[in-house]
Length: 156
Image 1 (cartoon, rainbow, N blue to C red):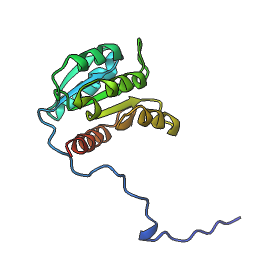
Image 2 (cartoon, one colour):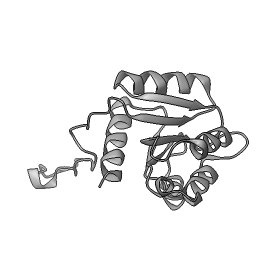
Image 3 (spheres, rainbow, N blue to C red):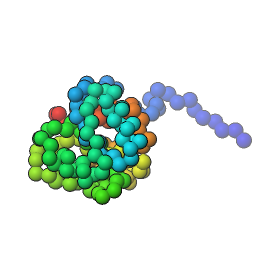
Image 4 (cartoon, rainbow, N blue to C red):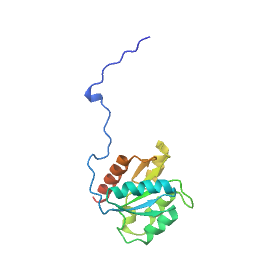
């Protein structure tokens, strides 16, 4: 048995990822990281600090929600949210942030970080008001590109 394939032309090339190739300068940007796993948190903090960002870590989403609620308006440039967390899950937390009575609650980028990466999981995150989804284990390039795009979009 033989299979015959036609050679793919340049017009048949896969679509490029929608994320930007060039990153914005993230130096000095402040990120709220809601992550209950200490190893995942340590890795994310190292990756974020490597690009000059400062990070506040919340060990569960309730602490993260309280931190955001008590912060100055516009203090955080983005929120990285684990989905499976104790006390409250990331979906509930994103909805709670979006419902806060302050202008930045509707505009701060909230990005899910989760091993749950099926289309339905990503759709749940979008429906909760999240701006993006990063699958775990985290690929540093995707993390930076997703943050860069979300922070650029929120400034428009």
